[in-house]
Length: 361
Image (cartoon, rainbow, N blue to C red; front, side, top):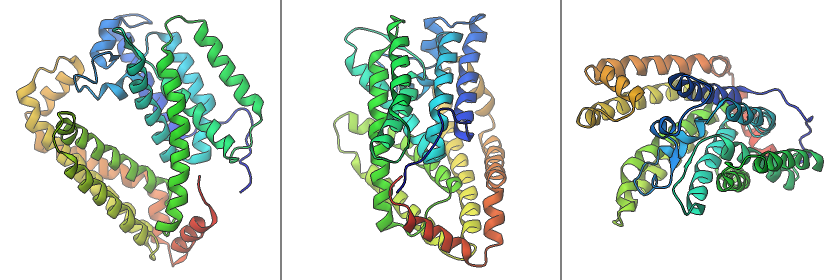
């Protein structure tokens, strides 16, 4: 397969814009509460900063939350600049679904590796591990011969990253290096998955379907993390639910694959996913309502205020949110629905042809 040609700069795409928006909003909220262009350590800790005892205390949500918080405006600006410069290239090459997977894997594993390296108490925040993972993934694609960049691209970007890190004594090297390695490995694994899929799946999934399935996988992972993972961490047998959920998810992916190969299958799949999204939101709302009252207050002002609004009317609010999520899914996938409704048998053939044409990322 010929290399993927691109210039030094690339216009950002949807997933990059989404991550930038969430990160700026989360960090901006901290700056507003702090009343300045920087946030104190106590506020960052409260909203999700990664610290030395987070994993031991099973505060796994911090493995993601820390990556959306920043110490000050300069810290935020530098990381968002790296996200734009590197993320646009990666998203264009692998698509939004795999881009988000690589980004979040680098964020989580960067925090885990950084936590293992630290021998003293610490508090870390920032998207540096995740953006380093983007650079690692691009290097992986270049090594695999699937990205036609010159060596100067990596020399300049890695060199500037190292120079900036040396110029700041507060840089968390463990998170940076861990994120870079995680991004490189995650990209290699996804390439292997795509090569394996050529023998397992008939169709190349449209990006909208792929992103939706990835989000549902994240919800399942969070459920496992909050339930069976606690049992596993305690040293007892708890792999049964994990295996069942993994097998069920693989079965769903195969059903989607079979449906996409049918006439008008794309419209059927998108409509079904909208229903599944709504049902998932409804169930999550009921679970949250069941657990939130005994644990109020949680100690996090924003979360406490949301739970106070939510808990008295969980069924109504969950139902309205589920309807909104279903409508949003249908709106965002309007092109896919239109393409599926107009299908006279060519969509499935084109998706099967795309699967047979491409091997790997």
